Image (tube, rainbow, N blue to C red; front, side, top):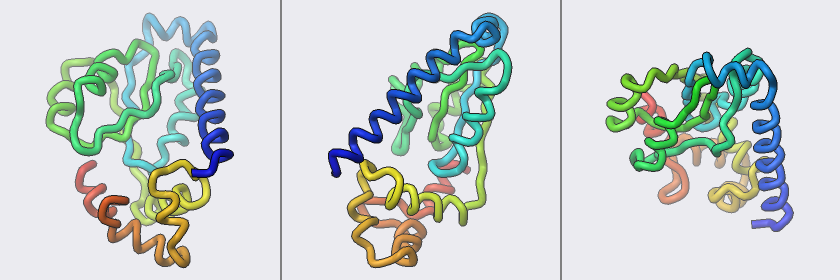
Amino acid sequence: MEPRAFVDRYWALTVKHGRTVLRGLRPIAIKGRFVGPRVLLNSMPKAGTNLLEHALLHFPLMRGSPWRTLRGWSGIDEKTLDRVRNIRRGQYVTAHLPAHGDLLRVLPSLDIKILFMIRDPRDVVVSHFKYVTEIDRTHRAHEHFASLPDDDARLLAVINGLHGVAAPVGDVLRRYA
């Protein structure tokens, strides 16, 4: 991993965290702590989570969460379930959580609104390989995708999957069904 890419990635996360905290101090966001909804913003990766998150920043009574995006590809651990349970009034939390039974059993009793972002799978595939290859040079699959000869090979790698590197897009879609 390139040292500069690592610094850039974590600097961007630090800036985002600071902005999230500051936006949560707006008077309307403070009011949301008492009367706002609890929201879980969920999508598969590269399906528009950031777009929806930016839209929610402009809703009255809402503030973001300082936590990183919740994930749980193989299952939902207790820490992730606790973070879901601890979503506060007027707060949204972003997630890439497939439809796991443990999560589906807990959500109905929590009075959490769920926004699930859906995007055309063809766009998700293109966005995924572009993101891993060109944008997030700290991604664990970056070196592998960057070593492929061209965009056609990268596209096929996302569609068909690469053992130990990326699941086939069909498997990913089924987990979110």
